[in-house]
Length: 273
Picture 1: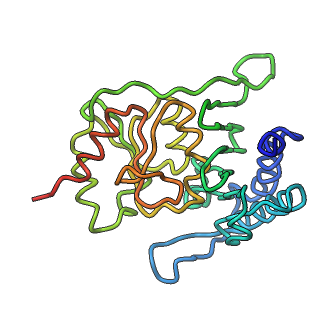
Picture 2 (picture 1 turned 180 degrees about the horizontal axis):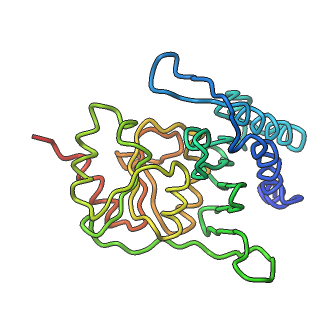
């Protein structure tokens, strides 16, 4: 009952996406400055847009569901042991955002007793939303006809029998831990094509049947929780490199077809001469 109330009362998740988009869009494609959160490590930018969007979502959640927990990239955790916990990344793909590319999105995830149960990726600039509950997943975007009514369609991954026929994506090989980079390259040399970039959008492309395999490391919970129910709802699989649940992040493998998921895991575990 509580889960239904969360998802359907005033279309709450949609409302979260609306308020985050309203906070972010005034900053996109402007001369926005970015701070570096890395403290001397790999450049990790944060902007006023990130903070404004997360604050807006946190306030709405706290006002609507005060017993729920929240984990966010910019402002940390509150009541994270609650039965229901919202996991937020206001701008996944901040580097793309500050470069003016629309391959970023707002991630809104919900866990129930530690398990990802609902997720949405909202891209307000191009007006696309991907969402799912682990049983089904959907895309909604601007109409391509004169009706003016947004299109909606069910997402489904595509079949891919082998790595040799697969399209592989990662945000950047340079983000893969140096000691694991050659392991990633061992998989990359087996696939038909590899592409870089995309951040959260790559996972949604996988759910939509456009990409077959994603391999990444250094993923946080707020990077992945919202995407798990979308990928699983579209018929895909997403785990750690060890085949364990991806909810807490870490080293991640997502695939549209279980056959290449297994082949990817096998290739990642091969010893490199």
